[in-house]
Image (cartoon, rainbow, N blue to C red; front, side, top):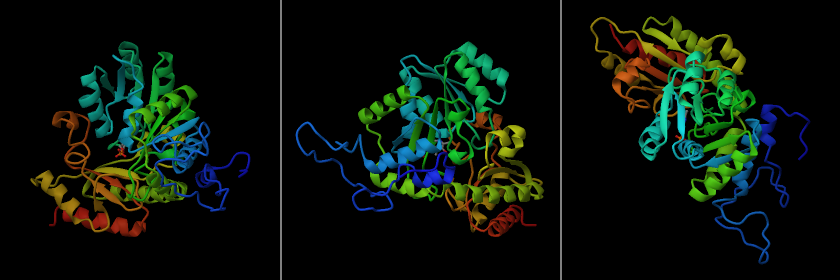
Length: 391
Ligand SMILES: *Cc1c(COP(=O)(O)O)cnc(C)c1O
C-alpha cells in the first residue's frame, strides 16, 4: 500500500507492515500459525522456510516497530528479557557494561547472576550526572552503556542525546530500554542511541494479555547479528503473540495520550494530598523532559507520609489492600490501572541498603495509570490513602 510521503505515528502504527493480504484481501494481516513452510520444488522457497526464523505475522510486527522507532529493522523475541539477553550476547568475552543504577530488576539480575559469572562485568552510574558519566566511560571503557529513561521506579529522565555523544566518543554502544516511554513518547535511535530494547508486554501490547520483547537497531550490521543470534539461540516470538502485540500496537498513540492525561491529573492530585510526602513524575526533570518526550507518559510514583508512630509497612499495606479500581500487580502499560510496591515487588532483589540509598523506601508506591475514567481513579486513590491512617 502506498502511504503518504511522511506518514505520522498513528498512520504508521496502523499500516506499516500491515498491507491487506494479496490473496484474499483480508484487511488485517492473517495470523500464520505454522511451524514450517512447504517449498514448491527443491532449491526454491516462497520466502519462508521454518518458523523459528521466519514468520509473516512476526515480520509485520517487526516492520511496524522499526518504523515507529525510526530504525533499520526490528527483531522480536519471546519476552523483554529475551530481547535484553540478545543485546548482551553482542558483547565479546571480557566485555564491560556501564549501566544506569536505576535499572529494571530483571536486567540487573541478568547482568549480575548470569553475565558476571561469564566474565562480563558491569559497573553502575547515575547518568543524571553527566560529568560522572563521562569520567566513568573514560575510566572503565565499557563496550556498552545501558540506560532507561524514564527510569524505574523513580521516573528520572536522562539526556539520551548527551549520553550518546559521550558513549560514541569512546566507541561505546548506547542501548536504551524504551519500555517506560514507548516509541510514541521518544525515539532514542533518533537521539543517537544504537539499539532500543522493548518489553512489548507493557505499553506496546497495552492490554496485559501477552508477553514479548523487541530490539530495534539503527544499523544493518547489528541487525544482521541479532537476527543470526535469534535464529541460533531460539528465543523467538510466537506468531499468535506477534499478532496480539500488533493488534495492541495500532492504538498505542491514542492510549498513550489518555494514559498521559490521566497520569498528569493524578500527579496533581497526589501533590496536594496530605498523606503524600513526595511525588515522582518525569516532568520533574523540567525542560529536558519536555524536549525529549512527547507526553510525560502514564507512570507516577509517590511516597506515603508517615504519621506519628505508625509502622510504615502497616500504613503502606493498608493503602495497597484498599484499592478497588487499581489492581495490586507487577507490570505496567496496560489499559487497566495497576499499583505496585517496589521494595517488596519489582525491586525486592536489590539489597536493602542499596535500595534505600537510591530512594526506593518502603513507603514508595508505583502507579501505572490506566485509561479508565480519571474521576474513578482519583476517588480510588483518595479512599485508599485515607485508609492508611483511619483516624
Ligand atoms: C518488564 C520490563 C522488562 C522485561 O520484560 P518482560 O517482557 O517482562 O520479559 C525489561 N525492561 C523494562 C523497563 C521492563 O519494564
